[in-house]
Amino acid sequence: MMEKWNIVEWFTYQQDSPLLFTQRYFWVFFALVLGGYSLVYKHTARRNLFLFAVSLFFYYKTSGFYFIILLFSTVVDFGIGWAIFKNKVRWQRQALVALSVVVNLFVLGYFKYAYFVADFLHDLTGIELEVINQFALLTNNAVGTNFVFDRILLPVGISFFTFQTISYSVDIYRGDVKPVKNIFDFGFYVSFFPQLVAGPIVRASEFIPQLYQPYALTKERAGLAVFWILNGLLKKLVLADYLAVQFIDRVFDNPQLYSGFETMSALFGYSMQVYADFSGYTDVAIGIAMLLGFTLPKNFNSPYKATSVAEFWRRWHLSLSTWLRDYLYIPLGGNRTGSMASYLIVFIFLVMIALVVDQPLLSVLLGVLFAGGYLLMRYSTTAERWVNTNINLMLTMVLGGLWHGSSWNFVTWGTLNGVGLVVYKNWKKISPWADKSRWYNRAIGLGITLVFITFTRAWFRSPTWDGAIQILAKIPNDFGWSTVGGVLAGNWKYFTVLILGYCIHWIPSVHKARLRKAVSTAPSWALFALALAATMVIYQILSAEVQPFIYFAF
Image 1 (cartoon, rainbow, N blue to C red):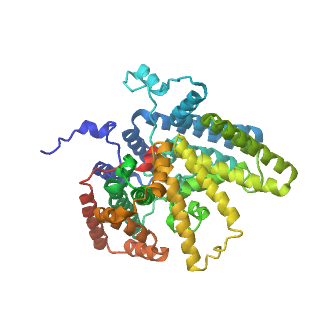
Image 2 (cartoon, rainbow, N blue to C red):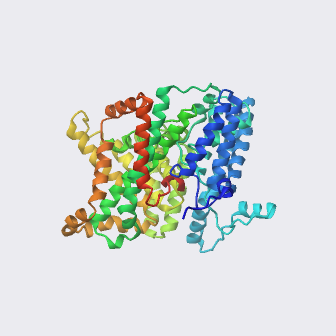
């Protein structure tokens, strides 16, 4: 029987069916947006207002009444931005930037880290704190809604749009951009629907100038947009979701039932899944933005081609990596010097770890480490420079890990990547494989980097810290050599798709560029045939349950 079409559900928030790129409803929505856009695209003010309105609707369909949080951030930072621009007193400008940062991080912290803080305080004091969603309670009392208020739900995309609004205030302070002309233009920048809920993070200095440029879409650019959309959907539905459903989810849900070889295979599969899932989303976002006349920043550059941890982070989630570099790492002192903020954050983290773990020996070791580092810095300029550089690097990675989620899993994941960066920076000075002009040195570096990144993802994927340890312990303790043949034979489709995914990823960039060029310059009939073929493949995959985008959780 055909499912009954309910027009009310199309225009109201449905918690179980957010507006996703993988749903046919989204493409109906986008077709209607293009229809309305054709009436206003020649007039920049009307165009921006129209896209702001449809972006708010998109966010409402995805997060319900949490779109009010988006509006709150928009209003606050629009006002702060103009206040910074008009104010000529340096300390007052700095205070306004600080206000923007504090307000945005408070909103982010309240919704994302309330449980993390409550759990930490419970482990520390034994006091059971009840977390109440004051926003839901206030809305219920004000307008008679029935939102659940005894738990805090994370608004989709809050980590992304809060970073964008922070960049707006900072960029105005630095003189990199002038304030937007009106609040609707700023609202459009903050809420632009293709990248709103999972990035890429768009800086004000990159996007705001585009608000006032006339619409321009050449045939080649339209063809490139279609390529990115199809490429992203195929990554997500044909690669990421298939790997997850066929093997990865089963292993991570019950790791005790699987051998070390199977858990290792699931880890390498998850590395490909998270890349295909996230880069697939941003590919679609970039393509949709192109059709609307806007350019979003590149977010991935074949990260598994990296031959070092440092190179990996120059290729992975570029919009976040560069944001953390320019708005956190460099302000902390970068590779030049330390700062009081750096030392204070390190001290707080060490105290938190010592209190949570509750091991006297560890507390003593952490205290000795902190005191020893301090003494070295006091009496050695070389040691001071080394410590400062590595502290800032470690803090950036730890806080980057915490940005991804409010748990010790993500703190551990960020810390391990920070350690990897510090070790590489010092190892490369004496490494016998430093000469990357030799293919075998590149192969060794690529293999070590892929293995390291993949094994740190145990904490990224596992629901608990102990679960990550359990998965990793399986590999040396219960590898199951005798079962390898049976596992390969029983899951040959999974391994075929996984190997094919890595092989496609490792194709030289020059060949991928040629493919993009061929698609973008193809005649319309060929482009239509390609889109039809991709749609047919995707339609077959859609018979299975579509997985949510991984980065929606962040």
